[in-house]
Figure 1: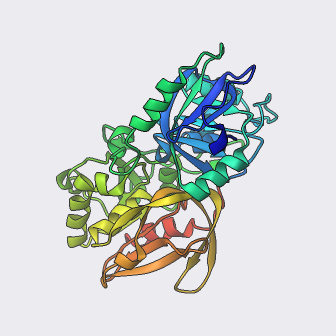
Figure 2 (figure 1 turned 90 degrees about the vertical axis):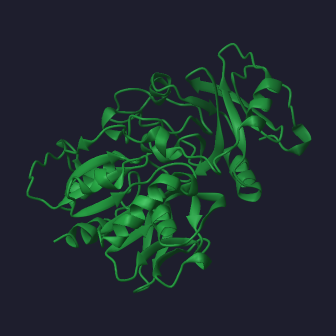
Length: 388
């Protein structure tokens, strides 16, 4: 890991990949996956499993994921663990070289999968040092590049990193959202059986607004007893109400909630006025907060991993949760009409709200936990159970 004394570090022999930070730091390594270059914000994820789910989570759009667990790629990839076919992370940084997979479920190597999906990888990096840098200085903008011949125009890559505006003020939900209505089919996955089929149209109908959703969210709604119709995130109030939903789900997604909220918040506010049951997670939670009168802000480093402790304030129970967010609802901005229901035990940031007098609540984490623990599945049951 380069430091301030090694800006524009000379290229070592055999280096076929590079990460160029906007401050001029150049980090050399071994490239894998797709060739070329991509720009994004560098973040870190502490999960020990689920790298394929992480890389295909649309909440990681325009981000380069530093994996703190050293052995990324050791179980290969398969078509069942893809969370979305739209854009997820643009690249990743790992410690060890990607090895042949050791799993009976593997269909391809991680490196081959990265090629097929146009994502750039960089191995041989001191990920601990890079993670400490992010913790101390915040998530930097950067360009990740891979060329098997080792030919890189570092000044041009540096300029691209500096010119990129970053995630603040950026509406990425419109980039990763579905573009057409979809009747969702399929429940939870089990080994040897795949994803459960569920065609019971008598179930309570949930309209899910897709701001960059993971597919496993919809499977969990089905598992909890709902029938799900997915709409694009830019859908109008008439689009939603025209489907006569019993409740509305607000999905996760990337980017700045204030930017996406320009078109989404008025719809959410109109749904609240009609006493529509609402459940939001991640970006959906943040926009529910905005609709209720709170504010959001960009975090210093964000929360990304599968072991984040969250305290449920009503009874003091601690949930171990899966998180992926770089923005948060500001605790101090919550109006009297909003109850804070969950807080992070890492930094005290808001992790849950409920709108008083309404069947509307949200959590900052990913209760579907793909990857991650299953502590929070009860939230899907709570939401679907409130629909009657």
